[in-house]
Image (tube, rainbow, N blue to C red; front, side, top):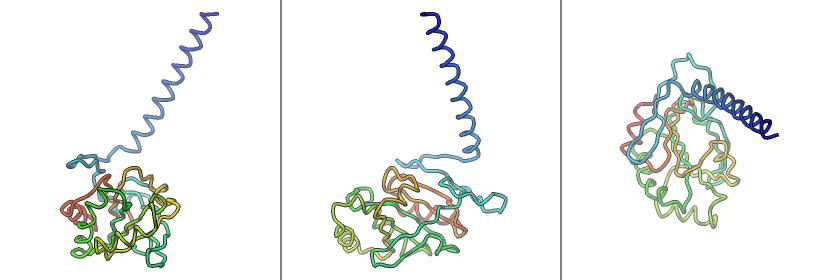
Length: 198
């Protein structure tokens, strides 16, 4: 009896090892060719210009993928789609008013918006806010003039697999993700990544 249990455990471990090896092999083929780097305290996916037309228009969240399209209402009541801005460079930022790193990067985002030809779409995780009034109060406090989008059910945040906030994506004029960052960005890094995009 004991011998049979031991054999079953060994067979189970062998099957798991083979499954795990195959799964890791598939993941490594997906991520090969991407370079990862650490800048300050941010882990970012290095930008690669994959717009030479040789790559399929795969929708996804990795560098070189087409950014998933979405439609949200703005704080002012308008409806905005990411695809409306095709032909322009876009910074897509996920944030909330209660998030200290979000507060820290907002002045740099406003400066970036004012000084560069960039569309900033600041997606508020509205479902996480204590009060809806916190959002216009925040916008007034920081004198923000770029569009504030309301992700009321966190559907877009879920689609973009947002874990830490702020999280930002730099999307080029073709709609491809060229850079993503987890954590607050400073103005210099925003400009640096902006200048790498077309």
